[in-house]
Length: 313
Image (cartoon, rainbow, N blue to C red; front, side):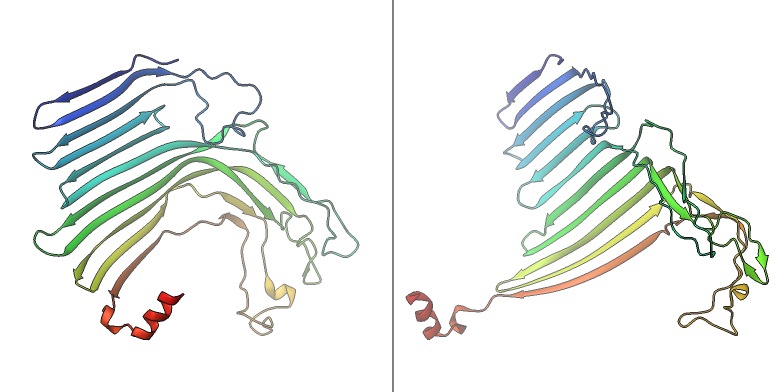
């Protein structure tokens, strides 16, 4: 269903403008089964939204403004705008938000021979995700930019940036190969690896990646020199999942220690039983600088014989 659409165009002599707006639109959704698989990038809701496109041109000021926006829900939208002032200045932004539905893929482990002689217990899977659970990730993306030409000089400057954010819930699975308390017989842990325990659970997601850069270039006839600097950062704000390690891990009881090190790498140390974070990603940052020089050869440097060869071909 859609509401009334409005469009208009005006001419004031010094400027022209036009717009088209659909202020009230409503989408009805009727689904059976699991809609997230076929509507992976859809909110799957019955929302009310709006759509708008505007344009403004001022020949006297050499200015153009073009904007557009589409809002389906508070999580599914797109908005962009660009301003151009003559051939010297241009700036704008573009944002997008949407929902990515996640599917529950069950994880199963299969029976394997155990490291303890004479035993081959079946691996087990503990699935902590309820059947037919609905979960997904909200994604937000955006970018902004400014481009400027220095008056009376062949110099162009720019600054741009973009970001990506993910918030929601996804799926996590990990393998714990030591879920039974250690029992030492003759200095050997007889229960180590006796049960491969696979766990599948929901995992919150909340992280942002940001990029920002700037630079410029100068044209000196056949020579073009460009300089740029870019910075990127990754920040994870999720609550890390916790797994229970029933250990302890004592390598000296397994015949490996600082006195009897492994064939390669450092000797492992004792690892006590307890609750530990599972694969926590660390924040990271990176910077890069670039200098480039392009040079166009003069036509007088070209061998005439080579030119005749190309002409004949």
